[in-house]
Image (cartoon, rainbow, N blue to C red; front, side, top):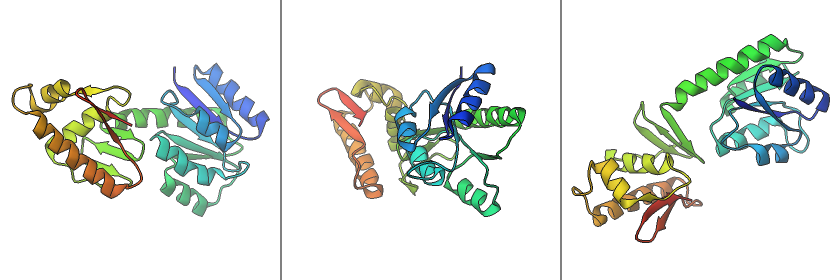
Length: 221
């Protein structure tokens, strides 16, 4: 069952959308403030419905924070129909825009399409924090800057990113990156890890992405 986070401060509209989602076999999560939304977004949220007029900060400002946390489909649900505003929101990362008042079936159709489109992209795109790995283009970015990883560096980094909550052992890296555990040694691996760290540091000096687990391997921080 797909989980959808509804970020809407009008609780009547919020409840109405959540009820609609339940009736159509979605699992709704509700948030009425940006802080509440950021606490509830996690790996189990498949899509976000976002109102623009929120307390403290606008939905427009919130999109950037949501997309930085995780690349997740965001559909704007707003009474504002200004074309320039829509263009700005798409540039910030919004995937779709529906104007209030809306027809329930139109909202459901847009949700279905956004989920389908994102599912296709996920097969080729891997994300972690502000990092994007694109298998189709064989390209890695950090904070929208090209990391210029070599083929081996890319393979190492992808293995780490696709196992974000576990230690990737050295033997696992040797086997899956080099094909076995005989064709590379620890010094070779350490050199590659150092190069990856240096390239990440150049793009984002304020973040440490890779943690060394002494004598075992590496994991993402």
